[in-house]
Length: 270
Image (cartoon, rainbow, N blue to C red; front, side):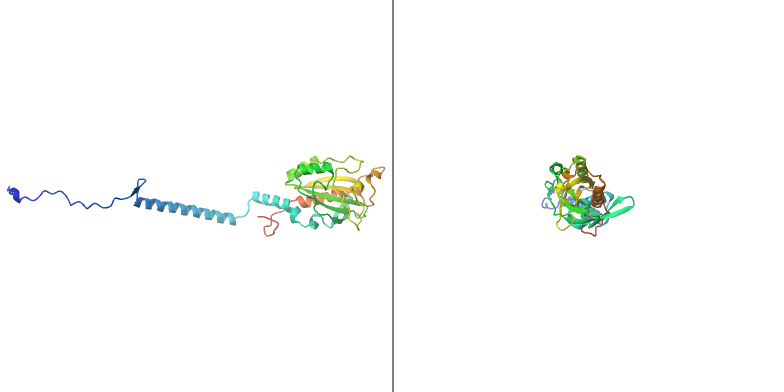
């Protein structure tokens, strides 16, 4: 083997020449810029998926039919607004039928409708105490006269927040003692120029109470000639005043019966 003299031997090989040093790469929280771009893209996809799901959920919620629970809530809310939403003539119809004996029906005529009144002045003090203690909102009143125009009946509708409260008030209202003038009822409303023109508090001989939904329906009845109850020597049978609870029952039923929601009508909030 031949050897070259030292001066003729090639220089030793140390690998490819090193690249000149560049600027240092930025590192944030252990991640380089390229890695951060990947993270940002992944987060963008996640946000897009969440936003899309929210839009789908909102669209579905707006276009689905109401659930049974929602229907019940809407129905109760509509009943509770009737005293404000309905015209007075719908609450107190011009004529209401009643039965005088089995198979014979007559009609009571409306003498007039009073303005909405405060609960503390529309009824006798013992009843007012119960109403105000339970959050009574207002009392609506109207007076009716039976078909032969011998008996006048003032009907008072006391408004409460819900049916549970109204039912409790119905049980708490003190009843009148039989054979005595009315002291625990709705105050009479007389309307000049009608058959009920002389019907005053002193003429009240009978009172009743009923309920429909969040409404307490009270009645006070007496004779249209205005004779004071205290002057009646012997209490007459309840038959002449049997019209009152029938009128109250119909008004309570109309006000308190829930209806199926009709979202096309303004009185409903669907």
